[in-house]
Image 1 (tube, rainbow, N blue to C red):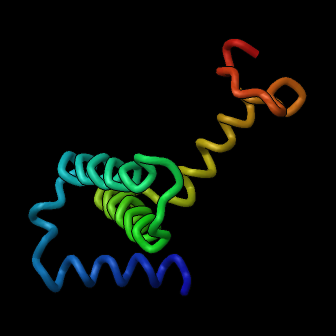
Image 2 (image 1 turned 90 degrees about the vertical axis):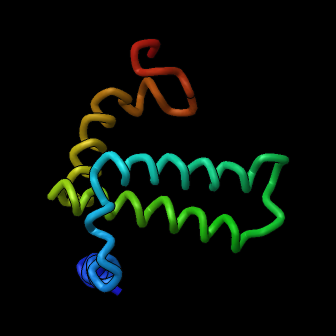
Image 3 (image 1 turned 90 degrees about the horizontal axis):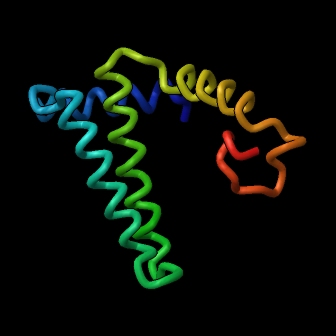
Length: 106
């Protein structure tokens, strides 16, 4: 499935249920955080026993991120690429490879 078809499916899902009225940027951002917490909960006591649970929670996080991007009128692929370009500059390979230090400590 292409990314565009996925976006269309998400829009149709929301429209069929008349949920766009609840999808303010603030509410969607809250939902991203809530679902990220549920994803983290899968790892609470170590490695998850339920791989399906991890997949489901990750899907929820991604879904809300995509809905938020759509609501804000931004292209998720474009903003990730733009942020990656900035991060590449902050973390040059020769200084960052194999290190977890923050960019201002490299």
